[in-house]
Image 1: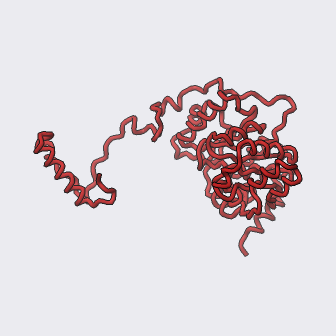
Image 2: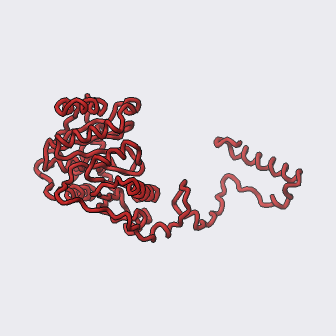
Length: 345
């Protein structure tokens, strides 16, 4: 096997030796090797791309064409039933088919926006048990984590509140486990019990789940009123979301109320929003444009909707908050104080 670190000279020598062996053993003729090899400083002519090369479905076992994906009509059996009369939205599972979709950013800013109308009555649960990073994105240094919270939830609500970390924007955080090993100690049943306990004590509960549909995420979906589905405009993520819908529908775990968020949208993706909706088989509720302000706010430890209220991504995430709670208008004086306090002296 040729090493990936082999030099051009070594590679050419190996090719020449292989060609001589093929000729001597009757496997090839000399004219098969008449074309001179490409020298180090020459660029080979590009090979025209075939239709299969343009599928953008690398690594996927299915071989649907790009047109089949984007032009297929939405599957009607995925229609989401409305909430029953009198049932309010108070517990949310933020779900994504893969990592890197911006799920945690959406969860953090949803909690921040809801805390404006329900200060100190919103709790954000980092249920990404092995690699959750909500506290890092909020510049928090928790002394207790979800490992303590699930143990406290088995006792009573007063003990549970001692396992929470308060954020200055008026909401509480259940921090993820400090290590993957400790995260493995939190069972799915214990997570479900924790969510129910928190719903008794807080107006809004937001659960940032592990990417995919593992046992803990499925249990979380059983204990919430709403699901916030997040994906970017990459075809693998969109196909993953479609498969999530299929599985949740088959299992009867699709929450009555849902919010579909397409994150990091831009015109360079090669897809229109109509294409996106045809792939996932459902209408998109919120489009969040790609913005450098998202990374900047995370590095600063400040929720985006309070760090840069004029940024298009912040406005889009604000629309998700308003979709859930129409009264959640930003309190600008408070936001401006936060912005000034974060400016360098």
